[in-house]
Amino acid sequence: MDSNMIFNLVALGFIVWFFYSRFAGVKGLHNLSSEQFQEALTKDNHKHVLIDVREPGEVKQGYIPGAVNIPLSTIGRRLAEIPKDRPVYLYCRSGMRSKQAAKLLRKHGFNELSHLKGGIMSWNGKQTQ
Image (cartoon, rainbow, N blue to C red):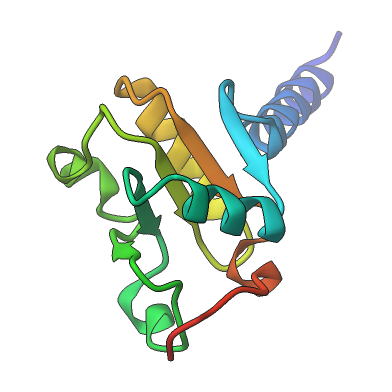
């Protein structure tokens, strides 16, 4: 094998790893449709924590009532604000950042994690603007 081929194989391996790490499911994360998410929030009797992981500028466009804004960019520094003994529901714009947030929370011992599949773009419940 020449060095060019080795470089190409390493680059391909990195690309595959990158996409896998971004799009692979998170162990223990419940992927909920808009209807399931809304039902879970209602049924839970407010024993949950609802977190909007979008940036503050995005939240101004509308949010789900009762949500706390903890952007993905700061969630690692704000873990103490999130109780580990309550179910955590996450959402973002499209579902990608909430998955990343769930992955980080999972690494820090959070077990009851759910996210809104498709993000707030898929939400058909009540929204505050």
